[in-house]
Length: 161
Image 1: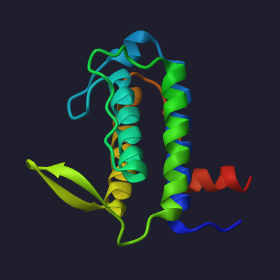
Image 2: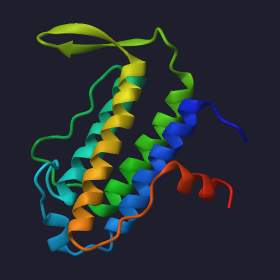
Image 3: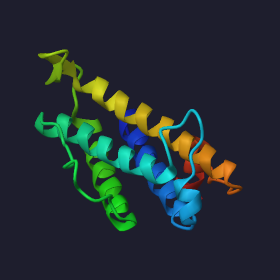
């Protein structure tokens, strides 16, 4: 069934996040905690950051409010990461089809509110996730683990086996 472009992009984003997270479940603690110059940090830290940021983008788009995890909250467990990425991924898919070109949300920007197009938040959500997945894949490669293919061609094969 043909879908609009944004819905397809966000379905791919959700699939890629979950596919990569699934492969990371088999990594050792040493592999999850290794770092590499030019990345956000360890695989573990990058997943925490990515999941929290994606929840925040969705919250801004859907409610106008920023999502923030308490600073003293323990790291999300692997099961909680999966649940968070499934939920935010599904929410972004839903909202990708609803957001109109003129929709904005007020965001604190440089000390004052700024009307930010929701389309920019959607753009940032895709860009942010793609960058961090690439960093996680580089860390996996450095650890001697072949990361999964997450490109559009592989996704097409999943959709149309």
